[in-house]
Image 1: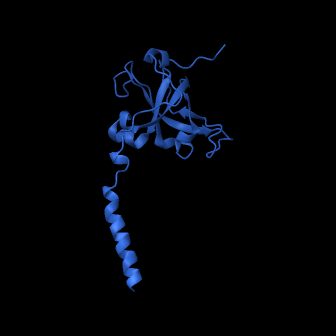
Image 2 (image 1 turned 90 degrees about the vertical axis):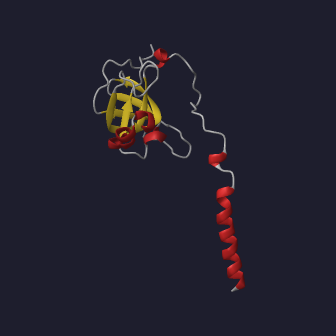
Image 3 (image 1 turned 45 degrees about the horizontal axis):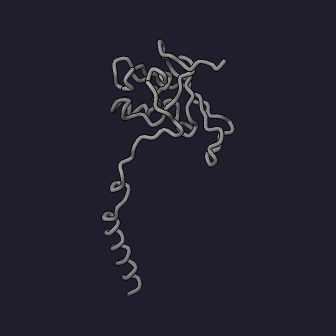
Length: 151
């Protein structure tokens, strides 16, 4: 009986002490990162789009909804990372362009919902091999530069 009380007391003490330990909230603020990316003028990378959560977009705006990026390869197709969309329904996604200042809420932005997701058939969630997917947009993003084929 005494041993059981000691175990319970130790568990309670640990639970009370945990909030006072430094954790993610006390750590250095997270800074946005692009893996293997480079900075450049927005006009040079104007084919980039934001991939976001539809519900967050509708409730809070695209600047709060974005969780991944993509590249517009035609007015209705976006290439993105499979790890961003492999466990998401197309109906839950939205894609947005940014204005010339990189703002996702500017008057010049264009938005489309996603009608289909095609993840690479050999995408491996553990190794991240073939980490690529294609999003089909519900409405075309017209008047937006797209990636041009390499010739």
